[in-house]
Structures are given as C-alpha cells and as structure tokens.
Length: 211
Image (cartoon, rainbow, N blue to C red; front, side, top):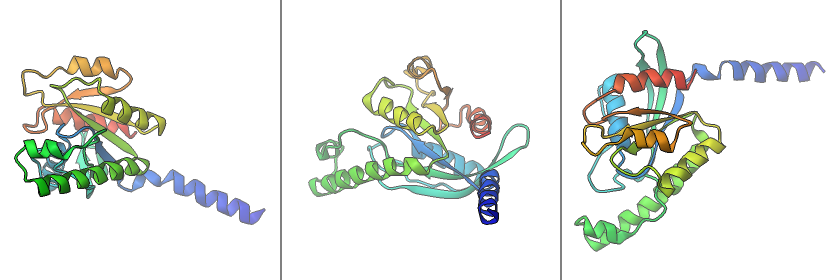
C-alpha cells in the first residue's frame, strides 16, 4: 500500500509540473502556406536567428526542424517557453512531375518527391508529440480542402489545442472570413508571417492556447 501511494504521488507531481518545461509547439498545414516563414519569424523575434529555409517551390521543408527553448512574451510581460517544431507540408499526393514544372531536373524532382513523401509521414507521426499546434493556412486559397479538413480532424481527435493562422493577409486575395467559416470551432488569426502583420496578436493567443 505504501509503495502504491508513493508511486501515485510521484505521477501526480510529475503531471502537476509538466508545463514547467518547454511546450512542444508544432506548425502544421499544407505546402507553401507559410509554416517555415512563420517559424523563422518566431525564432528571429525571440532568438535573433532563423530556423528553416524557405522557397517558392513546394516542399522545401522535407524533414522536421526544431528550435528549442524559444521564450516568448505577451503584452502583459508573461513568458512561455516553446520548442518550435516546423513540419513538412501535409499533402495527399506528391507527384515528381510538379517539381519538373518548377524547373528542377528529373533526378532532383524524383528525389525531392521521395523526400517530401517521407516528410509527410514523419509530420503525421509527430502529431502525438505535440502539446499545441498552429495550423498555418494560405488565406488566398480555399480552406475547404481535403488536406486541411484531415489535418484539423486528426488534431481534434487527439484533443490537441489548435490556433489557426490565416497567412498572407498582405495579399489582396486573402479571405480570413472564409477560414473562420470553415473552422468556426477554432480561433483564427489573420497574419503576414513575411511582414509581421498581427504577429503580436498571435503571440498573445498562444498564451490562451496553452493556459
């Protein structure tokens, strides 16, 4: 009985202080939505250095990239420590011919498609590690896609706290209202990861997300 109580108390204390460490914050979404640009913005704002390489060609990020102990502050001066996890873009189909159209050679295109496919699988596996997720969507595109609905559904099934960032609001075609209509159960913040529009608001929302 004593051994049982000791074990119970150890587990209780471990759970109680779990949040004292850095929170695993995943950036998920389709390719070219701006995940890596946002990861770079967060890391540059709070560490003075970037995390990922960005490109106009889809699937530039093909493996998990992590920046540990990124301490952010909100407008009230409170602090939170995150391990920022930039993930490969989620896609239902990856065709090497799409890379050919982008100007890559056949051998490079095939290798990139293979690496991108592996990256998608890795990103999905990492869902179980996440304590909070920012879903980064291109606000100029239709949010009612199979990839977006599947990604959101997987996060909901795992009961992972989600904040949706409607990115690229600096572009005229951006439509945040459509994203809000597609996913009314989540808070949606319109941002420009490239130019920093509404980034402070996004940081404030992260504190609400993991409270």
